[in-house]
Amino acid sequence: MAFMGTLLSLIYFLSSALLLQSAAIHESPQSITISLIHPFSVHSPFYVGKNTTEVQKFNLLIQATTARMHHLFPATTMNQGKYWNGSSEVDDIAATVEYTGFYHVAEVGIGSFPPFPGPKGLPYYLIMDTGSHITWVQCEGCNPCFPLTQTPNFPFRRSQSYRSIPCGHQECPTPRRDCYGSSCGFKAIYGGNHGPFIRGTIVRETLTFSSDRLGATESFNNLFLACGLQSHNMPFAPPNKVAGILGLGRGGPGTSPIWSQVLKKRFSYCFPASPDTKSRLYIGESARMVGPQVVSTPLLKGANPSLYYVELQDISIAGIRLGLRGLFLFGGCTIDTGAPLTMLIPSAYAVVRNAFIQYFEHFGMQPYGSGSRPRDVPMFDLCFPGGPPGLRFPTMTFHFKGANFVVQPIGLFAVGANFVCVALKSGEKTIIGAYQQTEHKFSFDLELGNTGTLFFAPDNCGAPT
Image (cartoon, rainbow, N blue to C red; front, side, top):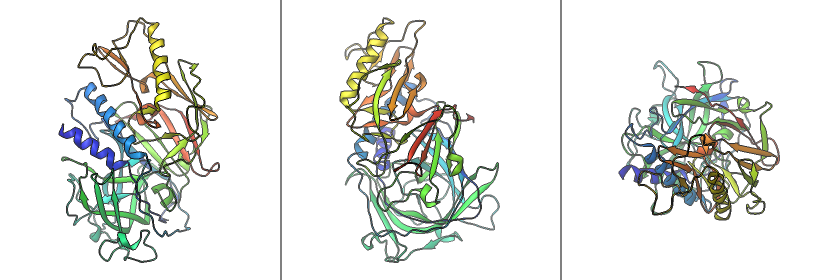
């Protein structure tokens, strides 16, 4: 139960964004490549332990998805102020992404600490979040702090690339009321008045990422970095290895996610189905997607400026269209890495639910009722007893404008010895979550089209760790 409380607090925390704008100077012309870690991987900072059952994992995903939705809509609370823009050109980034507990995390080097051997910056795990814009890390001198193991709180004062920004300075991207003492400051409340709260300073720093050249790293100087110095109710319980957030959100007026800070126009990621697989987050030209299976749909702006919206026109189950055109508001569907599961508005969910029931009736399967469901079945709304021999699972297709996103059974069902569950939820908004995004590569190109273009294609998403 303690872990569950921690998880739900973490969702509240991830569902808001601080508006920051920045510029960068790059040392060399390579792509950024970041390793991604699967949430249920043993390498993940969120690893729930080998004794956690599959049913318990699915139940945690269900509750995490509900909490995520509640705190993405309506639009998150953000602070805005005066913003500074730069014009220097930089090149590409690539980094390994790992799935940890319920979120994919990336390892990023922060600061400059010569003459110590090894990478230029100290390594920190940051949660990859397409619903947030701020990139921040907990810093030395914090009080109170959330627990952080393996790496110290970032010792910014000892970093040779650290540069403070005075309160009220023209480079300070936040208003004077957010100053932290005499320094440019930030503050953010996540999930309402009783949710996690963090404040601190905004500084200039160097971030170091893996390069698209094997074994190389790329450093970006003079970036804005939020330095957390006071945290309350933060959802990181010991032992914790997550130090902050890597913001990849779209951004609204005055915002700047990390891809914009390094002056790039696109990023891509690929989520593997297996927790034993690492994948990559690319920022820059290496994120461009081409090939016969690559399709695209326009990105749209919606009610929450942080999120990436697409036009969802219809849904098919097992290749049969359900005739849902008109149920989804224009721009009413979001693509989100922070929501573990896909949610559909109630009117659409009811039609989809009935289509699955009709499909499985052909195999003699009837859904569990409220009184017949065993205790060891996940809390999904629609679950069936284990299927007969020869059971064929259907696909689910999201018909976006100009492109079809086909979710294979591996990203659609939760299967156990005595259950087959449809891994979807009914919710107030339609969100395509990370579980349904598995085994696909997505590229967010913010240069093509009026408000950007989403490219995607099937992919095995990396190799086992």
